[in-house]
Image (tube, rainbow, N blue to C red; front, side, top):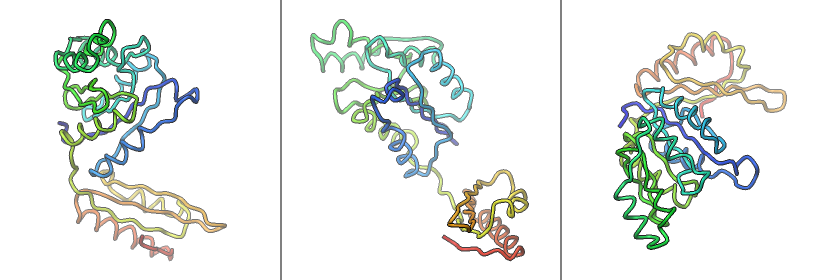
Length: 247
């Protein structure tokens, strides 16, 4: 388990780009993370292109705090590249026939498990399994931080919850303040620049008719730190005689 994880999602499927399917993974994962106090750092939606998949997985791997959920491409057809690419990037190409996965596949499909479905038991070395409540063919994880699930939401959603419950059940509480200033962002930039770089901050401009508003968000795990810089921002804003409204 990573202490301060940066969460990534990779949604793989050419069918998303040619209009045959619509994505249902991002919102589900995002909602599950937010409910536990986590947030995503990045989301990638890509085609079934093994060389590009390697590039994206490698990029995620470079982040020492990365935790990734990859959706799609772990089946038995020729266009299912994820198992091999995952092994190439995360286990130096080492693949083994996972005995537990093989047993589950054989139990589910009997004689129809051969010759192709059994290949879904060929997983990166030392992979952990994620339960498939639909047809028993498991998803898998590597090093308790890189997780690979099917493209079918009925299967993947249970696996996502299982992985989060096991390894990333809840983040430390984050404190925040959230308010709106009647102004443009430009009028507030000097105040924004005075905030410490290690505090979470965002500004979101809004327009209602000809009026301009800026939503300010300041957050941190240190409650006193949030209070200090929230008060600072409001005090400096008041000096400019701008209207402030708390959420």
